[in-house]
Length: 238
Image (cartoon, rainbow, N blue to C red):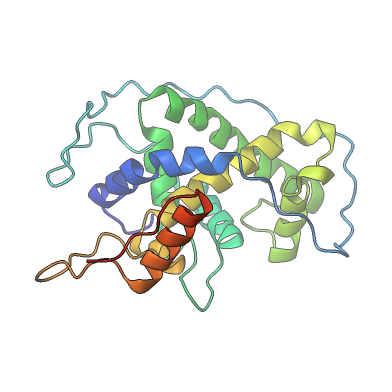
């Protein structure tokens, strides 16, 4: 499995709890103008699994991230983690600004999330585990091999069934829900890490040595533009 500590994944867990929820409602991107044709499959192979419940205790209402104690075990196996790493790279490939999703160990974050003993995470657990099983079932039906064994073009063919909201067939509604939720969790994990914050140019969480220099001219210009729009008097720095 990915080499990343439980302490790190717990920090992502806390940071991403709100982000992942906010991102879940994001609309799927529209397809390119001339998408490759996707072979029709009359019925999806989705099955809602009923995984064994997680009975370990939680960490309470005020976790100490400096000395974390994580009382629940991780529950995903290596095959599931491997599929998540593939999905992470498809959803968040490396580019000039940031590494790929698998390089940032998003499979470890998802494992931490779906193994946690809380109602939200346990609802996600059923959906994510069912979705990972569906990826293999769909791939085996179409190509005679698992999702991990398929090539990139074949994997994208499966994702294309559920990635574009306007193209999702009725029988693929549950797989599409899985895709949307998994993407939200991937983005939540990605953008709660330093690499993700740098990717969007987030400048917070950096200490300022010495006296506070005051807001930048750009910040003041933005503030005064907003005040003017509201019919309020602009302010001066200092």
